[in-house]
Length: 418
Figure 1 (cartoon, one colour):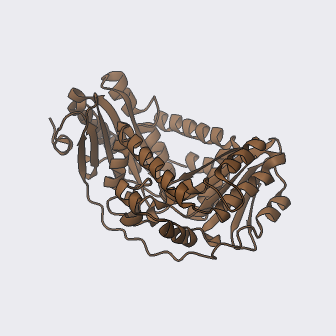
Figure 2 (cartoon, helix red, strand yellow):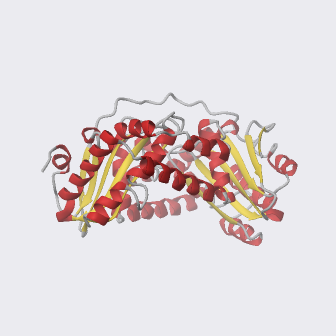
Figure 3 (cartoon, rainbow, N blue to C red):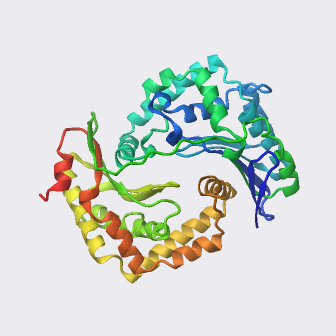
């Protein structure tokens, strides 16, 4: 049973009680992410997330960690394109103490200058780590290319240049603007007392600003782009991507199933053709990224430098066939069972439930029951799959990125048959 309550302070609390578990998870979700940033302060949402762990008016960084360990809690945070989430999972008997720690971090962080300078260096190392991991680097690159027309192009970590320019004053100003009561959703899942949870959060965020006025988003027309980065590596990492659909699109369920059939599982067309049949790649897959207002479809392959042309040719062939013929009845039936199983397995984890509820409520102001989700997948027809396949089936619409050991004509391989 899902309960949604608007608290006195203006924040939304969403709760799902599960009596048969002995733990609970809380997430404080904030509309603070890369899409709200400018080039000058790129990475500031993620930077603030790090600073929340570095001391409050009541606790030092060490005391925050100790207090979580004292209650046997697991806690962390993550920043995405559209939101930041701070979460804790503990035994049910300790969940209110856990809520107190999270609230202290989110409302009383001091943004100490010494800690800020140290943490800036930590994030710079995080950026280097991504750059040193070719499959992550190529994904970041394609994400920027396929979203060149909308704010999703902004990098979550920022750049060394933007990070070096962010000072404490800018950070506090941005924090006060984005961390407003109306901009926050608190999501709770597991075994807990609902009345006590309401009491815990009722006025806890009252010290924050009431709401956040957002500038209208600038979205222009998509144009395909290409980028090849040459590094001293043994493999070519290739991503091909095209705009897809948003979390709220009528084709959402069809896109999830279409991806599973095309490249989202070991029985998928891409995996069977490129890895099993042709032996071209160890890792090859496709994936959807869904956001509240947009989305994209991405294909990844890691291959030997001399197998790039054959791999891209095989991907093009599969896309063309899929767009023309769609899926078989058997493929669709198998995809439905796989996707539904994966969804249900996730729902049996209280942390996953907390994340699903919080994210959906914050970003699209909707909450779906498991029955609605399963019915959504069951309702997808072969015609729907063919329609989704036609959106992703034209190679002429794709942006492409590669991180590779030697320069090559990626654009040419995509645009011409060899």
